[in-house]
Length: 460
Ligand code: F0G
Image 1 (tube, rainbow, N blue to C red):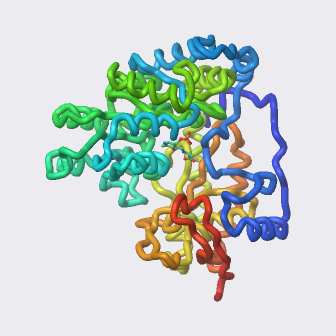
Image 2 (tube, helix red, strand yellow):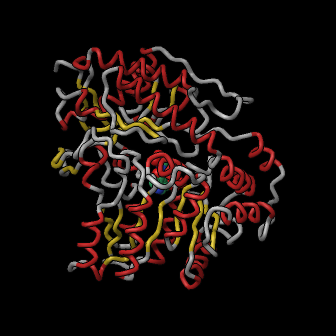
Image 3 (tube, rainbow, N blue to C red):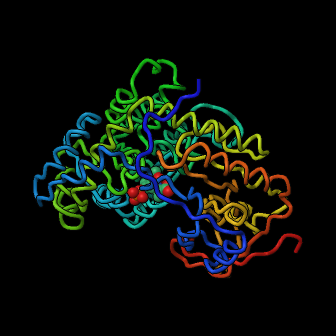
């Protein structure tokens, strides 16, 4: 029997239904950049799973009662209890979102010229490493290079490359190892406990701190239970506890697996490091018992951290993603295999093989999803990861041309996802009709968010 969500829907929000003509005008007005679209023009928004989950009645009840004391509010103690049941970090700070936790931690731990090693740094994570003057280096495992293979843990870090770097000439410059669970920049693939244990051992051997970017810790724990021998009998909470216990601390955006509109956790084991981070936090974010968060959001996070570990919820979320993947494959579109949980990554380069990298096949598919069906998604290809000369010519394309369909938590039903698969099936019937794009203007910083493009109709 197919798993079903362990909740019913009590409050709903209407979604806009638009015509193709309206969408063509809206996308042109947005300079063909989906980040410029008003959400009032988007029917199904799969741009991100961050802060877009539906909140529960229990979360809203907590929010309504939230104690807004500056110091030591009830909301903080509930947050602290939820974190204690999950991690063994003696220091746990609320922060307004993941990138703020990154800034506070990295500006304390890393020095200019040092290196941060990761399975894959998320883009804000990379930016916060670079802002300190350090280098962010990704070492994804070789299995990730084959998008079609079904290895269970393609989010792992490449342990050989990690050891070689730690032992080699750059070893003394490594300031931290940061493992992202699940690996958002790497196809949403999970990281195995075996990989995390090996990272711990290497970090101990070479005296380097090991942190987690744990935005999707519950989904990683669930996929460990499902895919890694020896973990199937453990609860997701037990696996999450073991995961956090391996690291020296974590940054975790709780807009994902906290199922909250806003919030993050900075968890730290070492008291000296905690003291320094706390000073930074108080100076720049807020006092240690609210860290830039409103009490009502702290309450939503505290409650969300319980709800996200419900095995019935995780089972049904995994089943929805798997079913969505199946429908997309039936539509004739390949995804990065195997399906993870928070997003599916479409292989746009293969579907639109007639569009060269400098016509941006990922962006072309994301735009066509919008034009054909009002579906918003994000390109993860050469626009995002390629390198360019000063005239915006693509010099080095990305290794893959992907489109991420993020799946917000508890927000859309299977019927919405079926609709997305239907729209994709229509596109896949006539891929040659899909337009390509060229860059009109690209700022040097945060290119993805501020790009302006022009459409090149198919056949030109
Ligand atoms: N780390 C990972 C792995 C993330 O996916 C994100 C955000 C962050 C850190 C930053 O957290 O947004 O709370 O500041 N990812 C979103 C996404 C934006 O769409 O994947 P934040």
